[in-house]
Amino acid sequence: MPLFDDTQTAFESKSDADLKKAHTLFKLIANPTLTKLGTIMFKIPFAADLPLVKPIVRRTIYSQFVGGETTAECLKVAKDLYQYGVSSIMDYSVEGQESEEEFDRVKDEILRLVKIAKENPKEIPFVVFKPTAFGRIDLYEKMGKNLPMTEDEKQKWQSIRDRFDEVCKAGFDNDVTMMIDAEESWMQDAADDLADEMMKKYNINRCIVCNTLQMYRHDRLAYLKKMFQKAEAENYLLGFKVVRGAYMEKERARAEAENYPSPIQPDKASTDRDYNAALEFITQNHHRISLFAGTHNEDSCQLLTELMQKHNIENGNHKIWFGQLFGMSDNISFKLGNMGYNIAKYLPYGPIKEVMPYLIRRAQENTSVAGQTGRELSLIEKEIKRRKGK
Image (cartoon, rainbow, N blue to C red):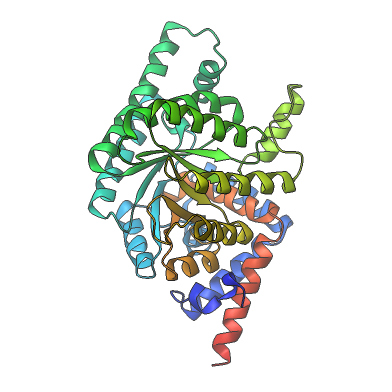
């Protein structure tokens, strides 16, 4: 049997009722028209602050993809997952902040997560944050492009640097790895520079700060190799979460509208090639680079297990992690956990209203990623059939 076809292990934690609910939800997501209509319908009542839709959302898409509204609810889910060898990354999935007060509030929440991770190191091995959760995207863009800033903007940029440093120092002091998400390409240069600054400062004895590479960008493999040469020369450790990417349509549309070359690979095969090449490069150089392979691609996960064997890296080596989103690809996560690999689910939490942008993106991505929803459905149906045949 292929490695990730083991539905008994994949859905061991799910009741029959859980499986049926997931089956219904993925059936709905599989229909692009329904997904688009649902996205519009969800936005209207939430914008008007009408509570009637909340129970529907909570019982469906929210319960499938989100750990809860609070850290306490989320931690309970994380502890349940860890019974099956699957760790979690509690992800405060609130987006769209604009004020300095909101940025400080998110920073304080990240610091609270560091304390939770320290107290629960096996269940919560990482803390994650988005650069734009700490400051406005236009400031990252200006900084990355060396554009002039007003005095007020300079002060706000310094506040961004201070927030980065405060949470990364907290990670260092508490021995918790901080994972920095990647975002849109036009702001990423400044975020990369900050991540590198933090890695050089805090990645002394082990990887405390981990940046993210989106391999649907055609320049990321070269960037990875350049950063390796820099870290070798300056003698500090690197950490990278490697993903395919999440902003493809937006990136291409902006490049076309503003008449600059698209940063996105010409086709999916090129993305897959560079993704797998990054896995190969990092495992070859795992003395210097720690890896979090965030992917729902079964071929890439299989490849990484083979690369680990090739380079004599034991299954539970702390420098190599696999990761998937909560509510998706349990056939990968639970199987790898069962085999002793390091595996963590991205476990979002937050108030339903504030997490809606994340949920809408999840539904849209499931619709747009070829074969993903169909694969989820086929595995669920296989397990339902297996249970009936007992």
